[in-house]
Amino acid sequence: MIAVVPRLTPSTELPPLANGDHLDQKTFHERYEAMPPDVFAELIGGVVYMSSPQKKRHGRFHLKLSRWVDEYEVATPGVEGVVNSTQILGDASEPQPDASLLILPECGGQVWEDDKGYLHGAPEWIGEISDSTESIDLNRKKLDYEIAGVREYMVVAARIQKVFWFIRRRGKFKEMAPDAGGVFRSDVLPGLWLDAAAFLKGNNKRLLATLGKGLASPEHAAFVAKLAAKT
Image (cartoon, rainbow, N blue to C red):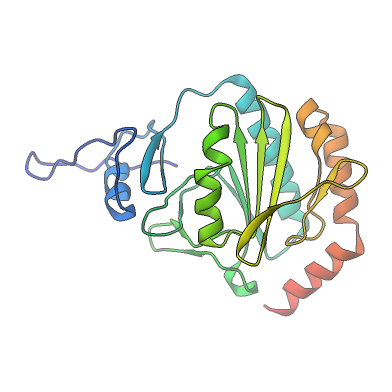
């Protein structure tokens, strides 16, 4: 996110964000916009988390995730992918997920964009790359996403080389298992298939080939037709 630093007078200057601050979303957002553009912060469960420097491993996984999300968007009119964008989820939650896939409002989605360009509401799917943030992403942040109504949530735990995929059932996240071939298949976004081993090992060719099979499936074709019928 590119933040614009406003011109502040001494009487209106806001305190800088600090790791561990307990704030509501409105106060957090106001202070975040006033921070330098190179600052990365999230509000999770009413607590401010400031990002540590990211390692190459995180950047490589993020690159693969971004391309995988983009491939799905291109093949699925009515679905939009975003990366590293602020999501305003509630009074105590403003995360900045590594990647999200959302159904557009005109196609029945649950996310909307305000006049400043910020997203409000829960995306249908969120993906996080967890290197140094595994404990947060699999606990407090997962709970925030669950409460907000995110329908599917994927965490790539880089340190332990494992992919977690959760689906919303009766208001709660339940962990999904991959199929016999180690492929996760989204229920919410048909055709969104992830070969976990290919992703973790950096086998881009196999990763995209598996997604291609999902995009060629009858389920994906039916989903695209369903979205088109709503516009």
